[in-house]
Length: 333
Length: 232
Image 1 (tube, chains in turn blue, yellow):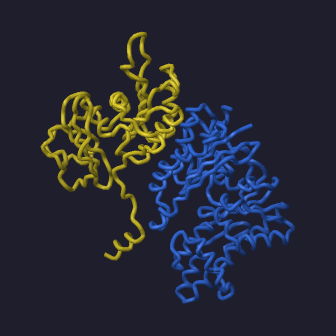
Image 2 (cartoon, chains in turn brown, yellow):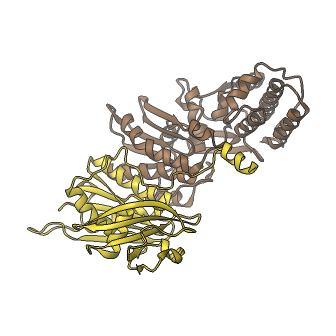
Image 3 (spheres, chains in turn yellow, cyan):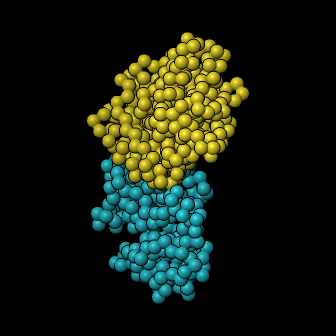
């Protein structure tokens, strides 16, 4: 039996979780800094790092109250903001050294890909995962713990980034993804046609869509109609690539993961596209769509690599590759 | 005297100092010191600490307190030693000692000499971190701490002694004071020396709430401030 204390500090969420390999999730906390960054129009890395440092250890203390002592500590080693990652990595490694526990360096994206395993009825490997967040838009074939194959990626912006930037163009402020979704519900999606983000066989591109939103604003279309047309273009573009991948890979389950997976319209369109091909569409619980530590614990549980003695972080780490330092650490096992 | 592990991460050096084992009737009055140069401080920190402990035949549990240079200084470097020291202190329920970096800098240069010193550390953007440190009864008091614009004359011009890396970048602010260059940054040995008296005086910090002394608090412009600047 393993009890994993997991730490996530890759961007502007400070999160901590305790996972028992047999009893499941014992405790978790997530603190989002977005209100602190809103006035700056985006995440300020130094502010994020300072806030992680202030909140992380008290959060660890709260999580461990009246819980079994952890037998391993997992942390997000990348990708993400270097300074933010370092705060979590240093805390995890220092606690592990003090308590003589093994340390597991987890890829943040791998955490998202495996986050559906936190569901009461988890998917069975292999499954297709559409990762849609503020930093990533990718299609992955998840064949097992630590076995991921990237099928498609965005060529420019991420879907969540496109939502936020379009929200700013529509005067909804930052971060405006959720506000855009609410506005879109009052608009007419057929009032104008915006370009699809689907590119090549499985890839995506959102920069043209963002430009089209700017032009629509300049032409004086109703903001609610623009929001609805934007959301439609994104959802149907993503659905097109998912349909293609389901047909090619022969999978029967599609997981929509990442912060944008909370968008109800997107989920409905994807669910309908999956149903056309007799595939089930699933999404993690709402609190596990955005950045969280429970998914880091699950990824650690399902075989992410053990960290080496230092705590280098990997701001650009892809989950289908292993940084040299971690690979070297694994050789010692 | 107690067993203290002290950490410092100033300039491009990560250093650690640890009380050496005492004899049958002698207290911990000396320390072992290790330092690592280069920018990969995060990668070297834990191996260096582990090596230092092992060579002195100690474990983290044996330490009576953990100390660190609390700033001001480079933000990420401050967070590194702060995170390590407070995590160790929290994990073993031991006292945490946040030693002001200016006090450690003065200690590294002047030891127990009864002096008043102008200390500066680089703060980028044509600024230095500045403080006046005075040695009173064997411990350094830090006063007049400020983020100073190097295009302006330094305050406390009457002070005759000066130290710190800020003067390397901006020698004109020295203003006829005598510069000591024994150490341009603080180090873990100086932190260790000051931590012992802080522990004796119960000047301890709470591990869950302790944070670095950044001094520079304005680190970004809001959208409103950016727009206002563009329109000016």
